[in-house]
Structures are given as structure tokens and as C-alpha cells.
Image (cartoon, rainbow, N blue to C red; front, top):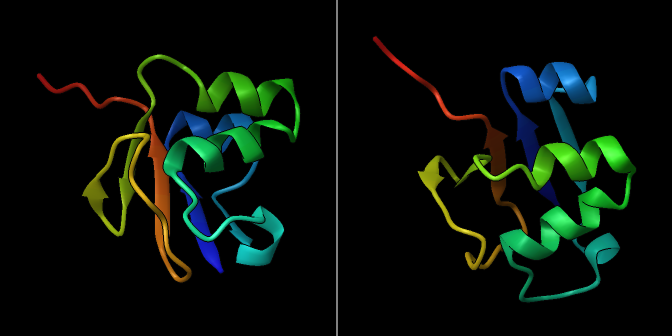
Length: 86
């Protein structure tokens, strides 16, 4: 199972903070973050807009990851908008 977390405005836009996806539902052993995003984007236009926004950040097991990062069963994937400070 892969846990997918959404933070800040993404959580508000999608109406959920966390979903869990069975690895068998994803249909690939060597799934990448990009493939996970594509799978989740099939949930509708809002999901596609949020996950494919140019500035969406991703972390896998609390480490920043790019779209080519391979995922394993048991991973935690988080999507969040960029954070600004001041």
C-alpha cells in the first residue's frame, strides 16, 4: 500500500488529507511518482490540475523527490505547494 498525503491548499482543494492506494490497483511494480500522479489525475479535472501544477512539490518518505523517483510498497508520498517565507 502507498500512502498519499496532501498538504495546505491541495488538501483543501481536493477535500482530503490522505488516501491509501493498494499497490495492485496501480498495476506496476516499478511505479514512478509521475505514474502515480497520472493515476491520481484520472480521478477528475481538479485532481489533474492540482497534481500537474508547475510548482507542485513532492516528497517520498519525507525526502524531496522528482517525478522519476521509483516507489515501493509501503512508501509515503506527499504533494504540497511551494512554501514562501519572509
